[in-house]
Every structure is written in structure tokens, then in C-alpha cells.
Image (tube, rainbow, N blue to C red; front, side):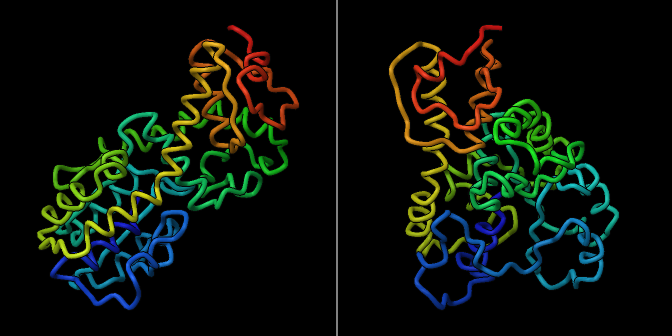
Amino acid sequence: MFGSTIEFCIRNFSNEYQSKMSNELESYIRSDGTLHSVKKELHLPSDKMYDLLNQHNSSSNTIVTAIYPTENNHFPEIIQKLYTNSDFQQNKNVLLYADSLSAAELNLYFQYYKIATGDPTTGLQMGLGIFFNNRKDWQDLELWELREWFSIFYSSWIQEWTESYCSTESDFLSLSNVDFLYHPKQCLEQIFKHCELTFNEKDIDKFVKMWQNKQQYIIDNENLCRDIIANTIDQVSFSWQHTNIVQEAIIQKRLRDCGYEIKCWNLNTFPTNTEQLYNLLEKV
């Protein structure tokens, strides 16, 4: 979570790493809010993570970013294996994690838009191969089947995000993705202090403002979900233009938690107003 953003900030807003930017600051932040266009020093693929770490020169102030969980690596296993490397034990380690189910759901939006690029068919994989490990035919599912499947099982899958901090040692700085989303400058200050870096505040306020503006659509996605659920249950007239597969699965799951099931058989086109959605609900 936010690995590219944190690495960019370390490289450009610390006295120890700071290098001259070749372009305007805004050009580094993509329209989806990521800094994925910026080259990362050691962005570890799951299947080669340990080999690459063992081969890399650990004395070179390397910035390493890793993603968890993956199909082949769960977070506790990653930590256990990394701690067998004596060099890793001397590192400054930072964990970004989700501290609640709703925080983890926010991260699903990030995965959907920033990794899967919003593709509801091939894109829902989102690097989440582990989620579909028992459904090898998931790409053949109709949209309503995929939504139903995802709404039932995503909460157990993303539990690894919410529990990850339990696997870390005391030498980790653990920060929630929600804190970073809403208070990036304060979180960056904590990261810099933990890593014993000098925080150079030149341009940081400008960067933070631009970065947060480009995350707003994610917050809007979540706010729309909450409005749809509340207004549907209360039978308040409310309409919306469009929802994506992740929003729809979250809505379906949260309505289920409130005691309502959506009559979803062949519902490939999701409702666009509360009256339509309410008429599809069954109290359970």
C-alpha cells in the first residue's frame, strides 16, 4: 500500500536521498493517483523476493518495496523468511496495513483502479490470484456470479491486511492506510524519523495537496456506497450514474450484514436508484 508514493517521497524530500527532479512535480502523479510511472529501486515480485534480497548489496541504502499477500506468499511467511536474512534485521522497516474491514475495502478500490485499471472482467484479478485459488474458472463467470462470489469471500481474503501488523516485530513502524490517505504529511514525517532521515519540507506541501486531490475519487467511491446502502434501507429516493464491480460487491456484502440479500440471479446490470435496489432485497 502506497509503496511507490513513499519511495518517491524519500527520494525527493529527504536530505539523504534528494535528487533533482527532471520534470514538474505534478507530472509524476498519474491521473489515477499513483506514482507507478516512477521507477522503483527494488520492487519485489513474489516468486523472486528472497533470491533478489539475498543477491542485493544490503549496504547500499536500498529502498525495497514489497506487496502482500500474493498467491505464493502470505504475510507471516514473508516476514518469517525475511528475518532469516541477517541483513534484513538491520533494516528500517515500515508496514502499511489496513486496521479495519472498511479500511481494507478502501484498498480494494485502490487495487481495482490502480492495478487492474478498472477492468471488470479480466481486471478483477487485481493481483489477487490467491482469492480465486479455488475457482480457476473465475474468468468464465458472468458478472452477477463474479459479484456474488466476490461479495461472499473478499472479507476473509482481506483479513490478511487487517492482521498483518500482528506478524511484525517491534522494529517495524506500522501505519494504517487510512491515516496515510488522510494525513500523508504526518505519516511521512513518522517514516522519515523512523528511518533516521532528514525531512526536507521544500515542496512537500505542494506534493501532498496534489496527491490527495488525485485520491479523492477513491473516497467518493466509498461515500457513494454508504449513501446507496443507507438510502436504500431507509427507502429514501436516491439515484446514481454508475457503480463498478468492487462497489457492487461491497454494497452486496454490507446489505447482507444488515440482514438483506439481493436477488442477484442474472443481475448483470446493477440498479441505479434506491427504488430498483430495494425491490431486489429479501430480508433474511
